[in-house]
Image (tube, rainbow, N blue to C red):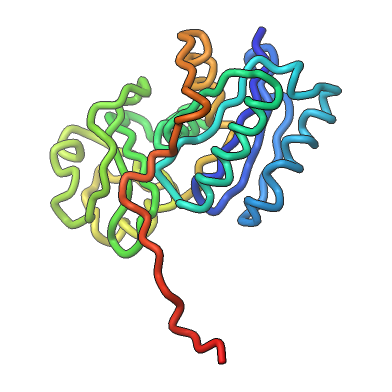
Length: 228
């Protein structure tokens, strides 16, 4: 069975995991400090299982949407491991990761019709897409400003789980009786099923040219603090 290193750094949670025999056998996580902890976490989970990167079959990274800096750290680390060990690169949407967390961790409310993952994009905007409870994506990933009419069609059909680090802030706006909310970050362990599927389908990314899914352009700002 495949051995796959999993890296999730798209939001405030930095996490890594290892797949062996179709299940997670090692896991590390910490809030923030992505640049300082991602590589050490990978070494720790491999050492824990007496493995090296060369013993693994692939590296899988969260491709976003999410934090520009977090995504750069995760993807650059994954690329470095792939180049150095000659391993293929897999990339999974952070929204799909949240969908599988909901399924794997038993978070779906009874009678749930849709899972709508939400990555915080500041103010009342989120990165989102609509999935069914089988994990199939029904709409394209997009930034959306949430208001009282958002997802009214899905909510009219039955219970909807809104999950992610952008879910809680929408609770006072999406007040429909069928709305359920789970505030959490995508985790490397949530990559388990989509990573295995991508590997089986040989859905490998071009290591040299692959870029994260930012959705919106990164805008650099100039600090207003006076240096002198």
